[in-house]
Image (spheres, each protein chain N blue to C red):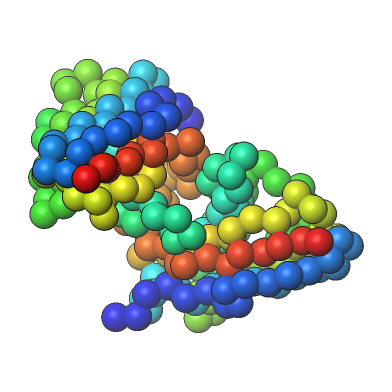
Length: 115
Length: 110
């Protein structure tokens, strides 16, 4: 079974631009969560989608948004990029909603650099 | 939301057993304890999950005392490839806002 895939793997943008990242979950998984990882803040939860609905959202500004499609694929969008948005963005999928009782499988991440 | 506390870093040598303890004093009745491993520039990888007592799989063991206010991840006979960051998470199936925390950076030396 194929793992979680994320595209693109690397991205370079400039301040003020917007970016869209894509995540394809493991086949059959309906939950997709997004995380931001930086050296200073560690791994931070952005939001989770389950059956095309956002179920939970972390403490990030409205510039960060996402959506999930009927095939469970998900995208996240960051508008008006700031230098501090440079990070590794990780996507994780699980069979059901939630993290603890259902194993999450992480993708390789998209490394975004904002210049 | 249960907060977890782990040591920032640990050093070990190849072949030794490593125990990483996580404190979660305000763990709730429905909370499970899950550990993840992360290598540089990769996503975290599930290691083990438990609710109480002891859980063992082919990779590690998880010891949870009766009060569940802490848990210990045990890695038997570590190798250089076990050098990674290990995260302890606590939460239930309805709590999706999981905080990974800083994790424990384990360095295995030859």
